[in-house]
Amino acid sequence: MELRINRRALVGLGLAAAVAASSLAALRTDTGTASSHREAPKISGMPQVDNTDVYAFVSPDKPGTVTLLANWIPFEEPNGGPNFYPWDTGARYNIKIDNDGDAKTDVTYQWTFRDEDQRGNDTFLYNKGPVTSLNDPDLLYRQRYTLKRITPDGSKTLVADGIAAPSNVGRASMPDYGTLRAQSITSLPGGGKTFAGQSDEAFFLDLRVFDLLYGGDLSEVGQDTTRGYNVNTIGIQVPQEDVALKGDPKRNPVIGVCSTTDKFNGSKYVQVSRLCNPLVNEVVAPAGLKDAYNALDPSGDADVAALVKRVTDPELARLLQSIYGIKAPATPRADLVEIFLTGIAKQNGPIKADLNSQVLNQDAGKLRPSEMLRLNMSVPPAKDPNRLGVLAGDLQGFPNGRRLIDDVVDIELQAVAGAAQTGKLVPGLTDKVDRNDKPSLQSFPYIPLPSNVAVNQR
Image (cartoon, rainbow, N blue to C red; front, side, top):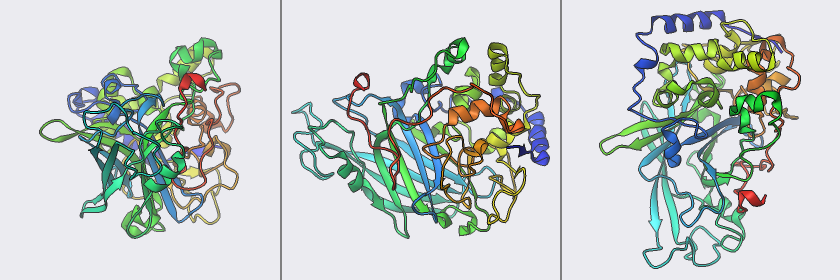
């Protein structure tokens, strides 16, 4: 499938990069750290505020709503007691939405947590007996949260005293964890639901890409590095009107989504973590940009020439050519600009008769290029989802939002190698991890329940 390019947006992006006062040096590395699966130097020592993944999709069982999920704390070993994996009470966890294309946040859902510790100093245990409900007195440590919806017009508290689902201690302590998860889902005023708690690590991939791209000969593939680990998840499902421009998804169905973490440094909150599209900070950003990148607001992305260049002239494409002989497409890479920075403007022919638009997920308004996960909420859930998303003709998949089943590693490898230009997949270019070991759930929050089995026993 050919992804046609909006030349006006690309030219504008190039001009913004060219006239920037400075590039990498303009980012102050003392204002924040970075995010994703421990890929940036500073954040590797701050797992509680380390974003790992963002998902955004039209809810398959409630098409009039949108589901947004964000994960934190990479590589949670299920048996990692006695304290397990609490949220940071000195942080603000955010899911941010841009609904008019200017790269500025229009709606923020913000979670903050507080401890309710009943262990005192008399026991090392997390619970003193089987826990059958979130309010069970046998649960000696729980966290409560406040959820706010923040817009330029002000802030509204949606949940004042929510209870986060605890870490899954084990079958003796939590014989029916599914019940605890269900009890932790809270209804929102005006419709919608929210959830905070532990989940299965649903991102499936072979991380040996860092060993000279899977061993230098594609021999190091087929091993799901994150299999068996857990993460902490916040999620929200709301009517599309709650996140759309002026409350009207028909007026503009495209939203840009990012998650961030703000950490209190003793005097103020500063952004220490950011994640929008998967693998950008792991594979696109160079080592010298990783820490600074996630202190940056998306509205400033187009002014950072070093970041723009990593998209228009990706290192990964050159490595695929030097290591595997896969010819790198000509630069500048307008196709990758659309995937990562502007959204996709047009397909080769109509997308869907009922979309009334040739645009997939590029905002037609005051577009400012920025690295965001973009979702066209008017594209209905696929009846037969394909793990390769848009590259395979499944327009409800990545990079039009991101579902739990989307194989983002294979999609991005193929896109960087030129598949978005040619419409043809490069044979054999895959990490051979095609799905999560746990199926997605059929209702909110969709992400599978956390494991209670040690990773080395799975």
